[in-house]
Image 1 (cartoon, one colour):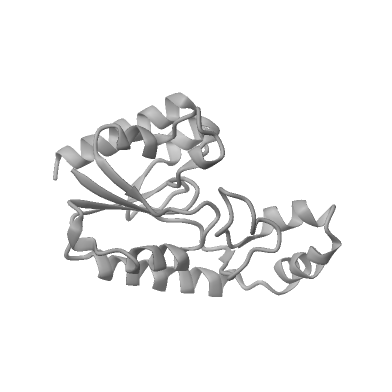
Image 2 (cartoon, one colour):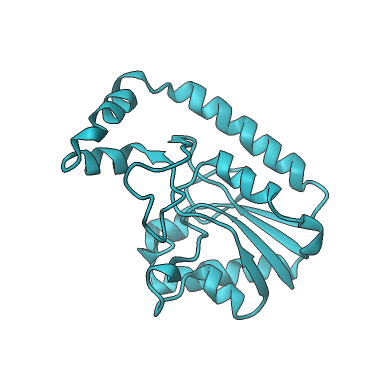
Length: 189
């Protein structure tokens, strides 16, 4: 089966940083022809851009790993621009807060997140992005997944909570479980 994967760090290819380890997308690629466009740290907007950059008709299945609504899209990340795994990352509060301890240029971004960021607006825009993604893939064989909870999609939140680790945020066992569950879903299609 030829599969396209779009999403954030839960679905990206972490082997660019850890070539000797395997996440669930790498395990899936051992059994299928996988093209992985997912990017660590990206927003739902960039997931939409991943989808629009591909010819969806050339895939048997599209897997969309949805992300958090609380990410701010940026063209160039102020910290991770040269990081092979996170170079397409968007602004994430916890990440910016952590790096602001050693990089004072980030303090205005921390202030923005803490004093001005509008969660309701972010959640509204996120819902619009998800709706647009769903409409773009509507005519295709698609598996929508999430790792942080969304009752509309196949959720791996319980696996994530029980098996947090390095690769795609899972332990080896967690990645194996996610891969097996995705393969089971694919077999039902």
